[in-house]
Length: 438
Image (cartoon, rainbow, N blue to C red; front, side, top):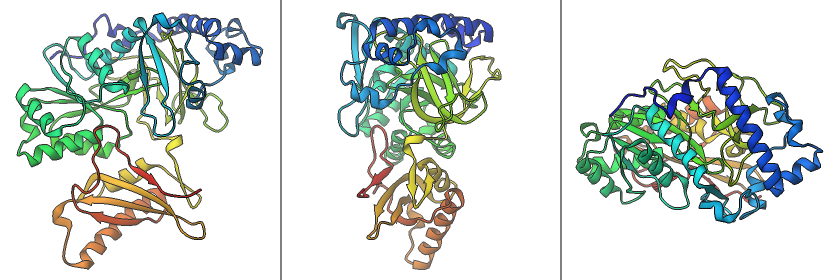
């Protein structure tokens, strides 16, 4: 184990604002010219706007460039956004693709080195280093989590256990037998590991594990508190997107007060999601990224749909790169129920405020005859909260309904279910089941 002090890789976390901006602009000019010269989609878009790379003279002009969205990646499937010849590409990754074809991304050897550096710097920020044992329970394959944490962990010099996801009893056994000090996976899967460990009579708080690198899905502060209390670890966010590279775009530090974005590689903007105009630091809007060092498939002004704000002040850890506040929601995860905008994260926050609930729930959306939308929350509760007295169950349901209404402004149906009855996921938890017929 080492501290999160500076080394040659993380020096960029501590640059002066002016020095960082010089580096960013030099890289921005290079990647913009590369995308225009070698990326047919970008060339066509800029020509349509009657723009040349030379017309973008400073970051004040960046707003003139077009956005790129997930739909563009679907429309250009599979290789339409590549900007290098195939013999320069050494790896493909792809999104999980819940509907239709997956989103395909490509990396050169140099692109992969940048990605590994981001994960390396993330782990450093958690206080992880050589001597630590990282049990990597992200899925390997086309999903970016497994290989992303693997390469970054190796680059840092930690011992990586490439266990991947699944076989949860074995996860607990190896965590105990190998003396893992760090775990990486989705937060919802780690909750499953906690449950399995309890079934096996293993108290995670008595094991060497002390750090969790959790990402790939939204999770609330209440879930973090639950994980830290039940496992005796520090739970940190690792942020990334398949379209940008994967985990390692940003990470929390030991102060857990926002996610540091590695701005020397990924230039962030905040825009108003309605007007698409840039917003200043501190204001909440949609996060947009430009990759500054990615050449196989550069992303210029990629709309993440993540709603957050940026903090420019230097962190108590000494890092000067900007921090991203906890993502409030994803604009494309929003549920509209009878004209009210609701995010699943709001419902999760309400549930975890209540004693006796568990972090395992699903939101079921239906449309009744006559066109009225209905929302039902299926919620696991601890065994002792089930009672033969119907009035006790009804009282608890009323409490849950009230808390959700207080936070969201909507009335929901609550169904209490037995522990273990909601399906567990080895990857991203499926929280919303939409059965509405449009």
